Image 1 (tube, rainbow, N blue to C red):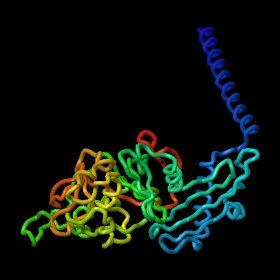
Image 2 (cartoon, rainbow, N blue to C red):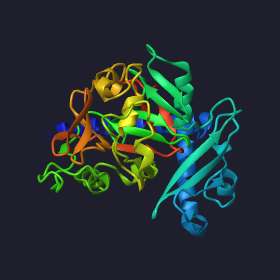
Image 3 (cartoon, rainbow, N blue to C red):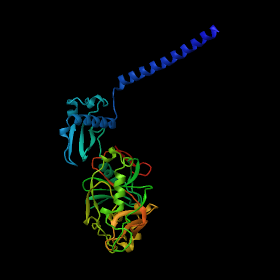
Image 4 (cartoon, rainbow, N blue to C red):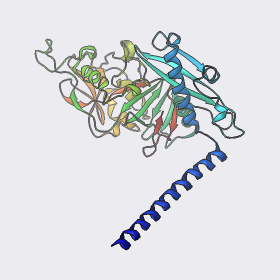
Length: 369
């Protein structure tokens, strides 16, 4: 019995020795690797490190933060180093790589700020905003004419299959356009809620088929509830958004589709979530016969918005019928506001969102950080 216990003890000691030996080898390997490589960080890690340092910096110097929404300031890497909130960038870059950096801080809401780290490492790496990447890619690639087109002061995605897919807030989106001030309009795709646009009592018609005034509509309340739901958009997601003016002007069935400014004759300012105006649907078509409601079927040609199986709401009401709204069901439909349609939220990414990866295809959508 003693021999068995002694043999068992020796085996245990042997196994413990092997385990300790492996741990020593691993630790030694890590130590040697660090001696050779140092504390080199990826460029994305450097950008994140600067952003975290800036957050700590402005916790101490909060009086330096922007006061007004959309106001922006910046702090350089040298300022952060001097204030002892981070070490010099040279401590983390490869030998021979020299970088400078800054963090731009924008006030995006009453108590919310966005922090974006920018690096300039010469030929090795430069931080790029998403809008710059989209324009750069758009000038290179077009599939069967589908792609990014400059229209007046904006860049607009048009055609059957432009590379405008985006992954944001754990949801799938299409990029609609880049605005004159480099903000990026996006629309959610995939299965979304099926809702009425409005079902209030309309005294003009004596029934509850709805009123097509977006500012007091049911669908506006639905959208605002979604926006304020932290499961839909996190606080971090919201820092990447900008308020914008919704174009809520109403359109007649008899208006020419070539007059795309009708919706923007009336605006609902300082909104963070909305729906697509009919004019943006129209502009996405490459069919030259897309000229008006009577030729609405032509607008579904060469138009990625028409590829969705389910009917979905625009923000645009009918000027000649206060209970009707334009809905997309393959092509443009003029329907009662009390009918059902998918809600496809539209958001505006601010001009500072950073490109991280992707080429805009469905299998490799653009991602941001």
